Length: 82
Image 1 (cartoon, rainbow, N blue to C red):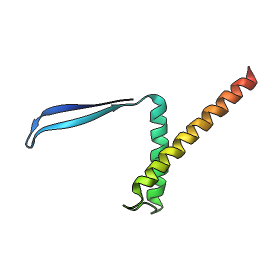
Image 2: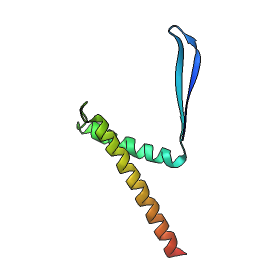
Image 3: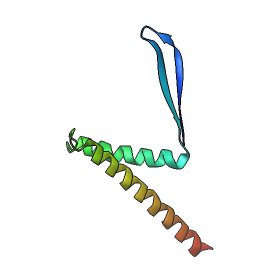
Image 4: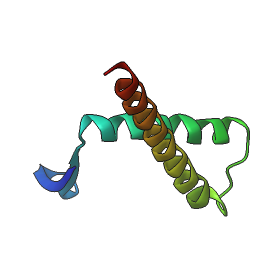
């Protein structure tokens, strides 16, 4: 992943910094899963200002665990088929 800041041309308020992020495909997959998990929390009215950070961190952790589980299952199946 790479993160940077680029300054765009001046507008009515002056120059506006713009952040760009370049994610690897596996990072995009985890972000997609985490955002869906977090969206489910939002849709079920579980997110408040008090727990927002905790729930999105939990969504990310769950997404990472899911990705690791999938990777392990695929590796296990490849070992069996080899």
